[in-house]
Length: 295
Image (cartoon, rainbow, N blue to C red; front, side, top):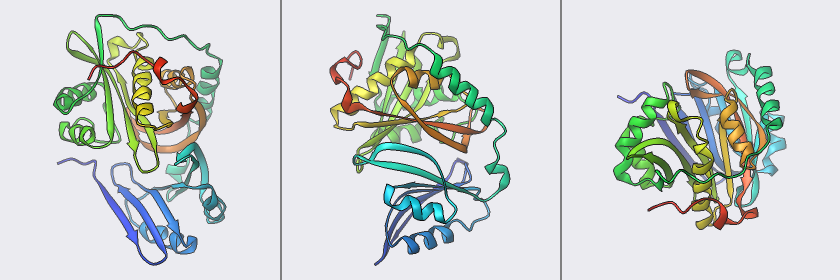
């Protein structure tokens, strides 16, 4: 049985609309969208968050609601310009346990970030002609699940499950993969929100023996090109704050650091802080993003 369970919550009545999900694996409640009477919304969130498993509440909010949320104890941790159909999205959090609030790696992560900003940006390098970059299809789900299982000991979603990957591909997620002699050596995805026209660059992974090739730059450029084709210009990514490499990739691709989500999810080998980066794809020439990915 898959232990990475979640439950969607949808509340609709005469005064509020609230779309959320209970993320039992990461012990958090995520409010993805809401509108209506702010007092009733806050009351509903409070009722939903009174559960024993819960350690953290995350709310994605429009600007107008931020003051009211902060007045009720929510902390602003990050933002993503353009998240809500061009309007900025704000990530606010509240903690139910002090251990979930405290982060003993914060200063170390600040130092890593400083090193990332000092790193000279690199120009785009053409892929080795022996490598194939393409958009994944549903039939690639099993191979992708095996690849991810070999890279990540712990991951916040059941990416080691081929059925989960197939469901994502059949939905609103684009997987871009890189193959060498038919074997996947790197992959990443863009999880699209087709309602608000944004996408999260996620599931970024490279085989341990191939991590010096700079392949993630090419994969993300390829995903960006696919997003622009769909008129999705708000691209953001949430990267492990302890990972110099992934943060350096996003900085190199002109993503802007927009905050850090404290003790956000279980990934790699423990629960970790995650840095938020964003980019406006409308400011670039889509035709020069990356080599055309094979279909």
